Length: 189
Image 1 (tube, rainbow, N blue to C red):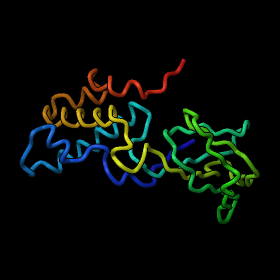
Image 2: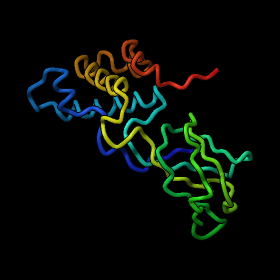
Image 3: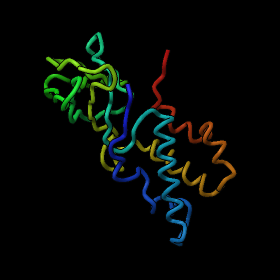
Image 4: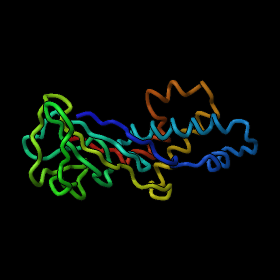
């Protein structure tokens, strides 16, 4: 299973003005740098929490339909399935009827259940594509406050300590930021 990003989030979970207020910055000369750090911090928090913060479009590529009829998705939270198609040995992909795939409500990690007839793949690799929308929502207020705080604090930390902590933080989140993320991590037993 391969997840492919189709469209990035339209906004970041933390605005540039929020970060500037937190850092008490009045000038605009480093807005581009701070904006880049906010994006990098979001990506790091998404990786650490295994949650996508702001709505974005993804494609899941499979070689074959699963034996048990359930597809465990590597992205969370999943808001909706938008399309699915199956590739034959040659020619144009055949669409999967929307009623044939069902997103299982409340499952974590998200599950898609094969709920009806689906076309048989005609090639051995990358035969099935499922497009979906994942993330907490399209606006900042849909992102849980602790995750927004983690993005804000990590971006501001990198801004204040340029080059001093970024390489260390890339290996492991600082404890005070990891504490914001911890409630959202999926625990394996």
